[in-house]
Image (cartoon, rainbow, N blue to C red; front, side, top):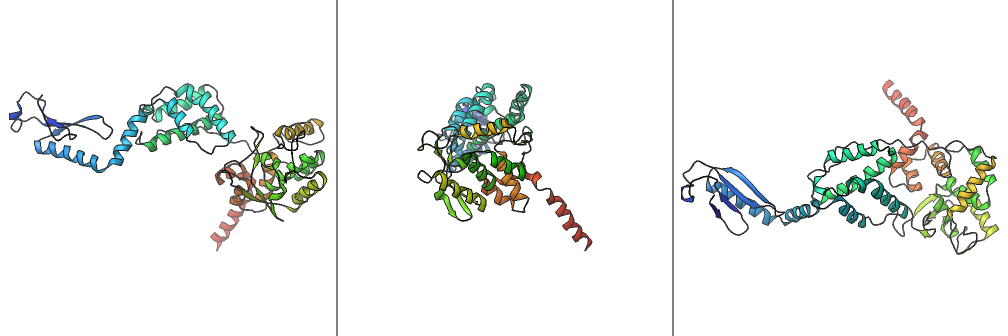
Length: 384
């Protein structure tokens, strides 16, 4: 099989026949070309009827590769990372997930350790396609894993494979046409106004303060535990700048926020009066109203709040609906806002949701009048 080399890096053209090179121009067999692509892999193409056409194709490929180093870099990355095992790739990907809250990182580690890596760890990244992803989902179903965990595990796998797709490993993301696990969030259980009043009357001053902040301002319990009088920036506005992290029990940044970021929330008069009364009766430490029961220099611990909630429930003096938790106080805030026509975009911002879609999914049922109102408005237009 005689060949003829061109300039260094261009490749070669040849014929796979019994004729000597001197007879190539007259024999009926077509030319083949051999070259290396941008990733360094050897390629062959056939079907060139003349030597000029074979050389022309090699010249075109060579010039395109020289003129487009970005494509070469992308292809090189695809070759490098495509050969990598999923376990190694996921570990590298995790190191780039900057800014995750402690709870989010804890969830990520759990999903990797218990669901993704046991099944996918040794698979090469270049071998993923929609069939592999669908098989992963089916295996979770077969193992009886809950739909919420299935959805979370799929979301993490989707993020990892999307990262690989952007590096150039795939021409299409392996999760592009995959139907994700169907998870229906449990409907939020919301206390009534009378149940909220009863709850406030049964708790300690500290418990009542946190309950007022959650139900009146939409704070998470960790944010309420970090209440600071210095953050009352106006008669009707409180600025949430930090929270007591449930894992570390230290003050830290807000969920879904970078260090130093904050969000402003409405401060109803009743909540403001509760803050002022607490300051008057218990004082503050560096502006903080709540602190550890045995050390005023430490933040208020979560277990103090949860223990008191359990005592109130066990006392049997409160009508606690099935499924109601401390977090239901925050649901009360959302319900109070939406039932009074406050835009859901504002509510999402005040509650610190990453996306208004989260607010909509959880609280859509709290806007039952929207369909009825829309029907009336449309009916008027149709009758005009």
